[in-house]
Picture (tube, rainbow, N blue to C red):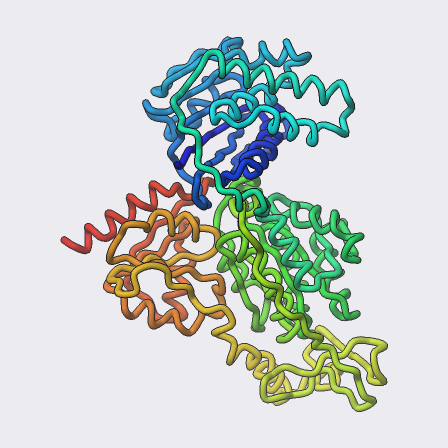
Length: 564
């Protein structure tokens, strides 16, 4: 079973409530679930939608196929925007009390959404009516669903809780009495009931905690804010200092100060916010400070599409900052990797005393699905040394990594400076020493390339290779199923490129680079770093993630063209 349900409506109509409750009800019943929302940059009005995929097996990717669509209001506005996801097989439910007409190819059914909500007490309960209808279509037990409503609304008082419960019951019973779409009862898996159900922002926040994060400073910016709020929620349990700074410049400098004092600090931001942090990123490079930067991408330039998704900041992260200094870029491909990469980022930053980026995007941040467990926690190490009176903060070593002390731990003086400096940290303009210090800093990553190897998935005797990074992983993997001569390479570690990548590229007859940007930034990086000159490219940059179907179609064309 693979059922795709889309709920659409205006901001403020409670779609977010359905988006939270329905997947939780499905998981509790033993069904695998995937959810992704796309929404406009406004508090009220507009046209938002949420996709919920339900399956008796793991499901983790955004798709075009829509089996059932519910429009909470003004059906014509929403249905026009979603027209490319609706066909003659789609069951489209619109509010019979709406004055809007519907001219779509789907199988349209008018149902009294707002009428039943008013019967329950208030039109605002339309989302609870729709939730009841959805549970009824799937023949889920009514009482279990009602309990979920009670848990969600219990803190809003008995009246609100009771009326929402009634609204859901009315919606459920209306479907039982009037509509049967012939949807088979889904096969449940008892193990799924015990799974985690989290989104990308939660996965990154939990990964930061597992990495030892005890300080976060940020200025709120979509789509990264969820990491900040999640860490704030956990702050008392894990003794995390949370600072909402006055701007991103302050946030970055606070984090550097925290690392200097011995904390493990994170900043979480998006492209426009990170642009303000770039000067302080160079400061991190000069003073050889660890720093973990969670950069959740969205379409630019400038404000761009602030609530949509794109992979447009890869090269920005790579080349940001004035001067030359090492950095590492990790780009998780799913929720497990979001946890792992963030946890790993703290260890790398601390060990090598460099900036480490965790590169996500709005798609990954807002993706929700069930998973059995998170990756095992990496054993954290302490890389801070107790200083002696002869301590040299920038002692020249073969690895380029100097012993890192912090003020007050030992007898040594921990001197750092943004100017070029000698081993003690004192300002210098000695040309020979300048060369020595640059080379010292750049030596840090000479033996780094295999921290997270490139991942090869599929036929090991492939002729064709699709390569991707970050959040496109699960979409590409689902699309690639069934192609005999095709394999997929996914990169979690985007920079430095893993050493095993070259072997995979050299074995392929033809390479397709798939990424959510306009200029094929990964392709340009591959050309620059490993000399990959001849490759096909598939790019999407309208603000939506790839559909599984469009990647599958592109793979068919890619292989067919080569066969000619």
